Image 1 (cartoon, rainbow over the protein chains, first blue to last red):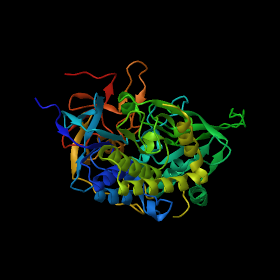
Image 2: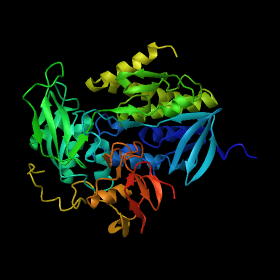
Image 3: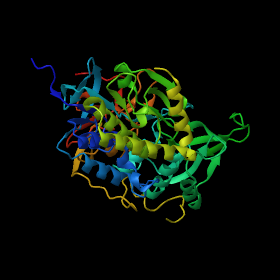
Image 4: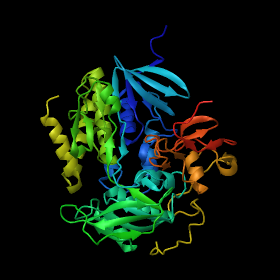
Length: 364
Length: 114
C-alpha cells in the first residue's frame, strides 16, 4: 500500500500573501512545492482589500491588495508548484504528513519541509447581545461587500480604529453604507492618520475614549449603546448614547491561527505584542521543530507587506535547510530581512518588532 | 465622494449596484429555497451572501438559550452560520457555494441527520 497520496519537497499551508510568496521563492530556487488552501481561490485576505498599499515599491506600494493577489497568483504558476484549492489541512501527523480533505476525499501528503502560513482569525469583544446577527467581524463585512457585492446592512457602527477599522469604514461608505460613528477605547486612533482623515472629511465622527456597552435588538441588531470612558477605561455615568444602526462591525484585532503548529509539536508561546499564541521561530522563520516553518499573521499579527517578506524568508530558508546553502537563497533572505527591519522601524512597526524581539529572548 | 447623507440613494437593495473601484462578476441567477420559500441568488456565491442579499439575517437558533445567530466571520472558522442544506445539518453557509434548487433551512440546536 502506498504510504502517502502524494509527496513534495516543501508543503505550504495557506495561499495568502505569505504562503504564495513562500511558494514562489522556493519553486524559483528549484524545490518541488505544494501549496494548499481551503478556499476556492488563492489570495487569502488580499482578495477583499481594495485599498492601495503603502511602503516601498519593492513591496507593492500604491498597488491595491486585490491586484497584489493577481501578481502573486501569476508567480506561483510555475512548473514546480502544485496548487491545491478547496483543500483543508485538517491534521498534522508524525513525520511531516499532512491530512488534507479535498472534495470529500481524505488525502495524506508528505513533505520533509512544511511552511505554515495559516493566517489569523478576527477577535470578538464581550458585551451583552454580541452574539446576535448584525454584529459582524470587520473583515467579514469586507469579504461580503468587496468579494460578493452584498451589503450586510445600511447603517453601521464601527468598533476599533486600527487600520482595519478605518479602511473598512471607508470601504463601507464606498459601497453605500452609512457609517454612523467609529469608536475607539484608547485616547487616540490606532491606524494611519491618512485613513482617519479620509473618514473625517466625509463627516464620520471618530470618538476616542468610547466603547460599546451593548447591542440593541432581539433577533437582529437594531441599535447600539455607546459610552464614554475615563482614563482607566471605566464607563462615565451619564454619557451613554443610543445609536440607530442595523450593524455593528468589530475591528478589534486578530489572533494567529496556531492549531496546526501546536499539533506539529512546535513550541507555542503567548506573546501579546504578536496577537496571541504563536509558534516560536528564529529570524529565518524556522520553528522549534526542525523542518517546520511559519510565516505571515500566523507568526504574529502584522500586515500583508511584512507577511510577504516573511514568506520569502521562509521559502528560501526551507529550501536551504533541505538542499544546503545557496547564494541566491541567501541574497533573498538578506534583502527581505533588511526590508522587514525598515518597516518595523516605523511607528506602526514597534509592536511587532518588540514581539519578535521578545521571542528571541525565550529559549525554545 | 460626496459627504454622506442619512439615506444613501445608491443602496437600492442589499446588492451593490455601483461601486467606485469594483465590478462583480457573478454566476447565473438561480432559484433556491429558504424555509420552503423560493428566492434567488447567484450560482457559486456563498449561500450566506445570497441569503443576506434577500434580507435574511437569522441563520440558526442555539440549542439551550434559543439565541438567534447569523453571519460572523465569512471565512468558515467561527461556526456562527451553521444551517441545514439539502437535509445536511451544520453546513457553514458563509463558504458553501450556492447551487440551483438548494433547500436551505434554519437550524435549531445541533441539527439532525436524517
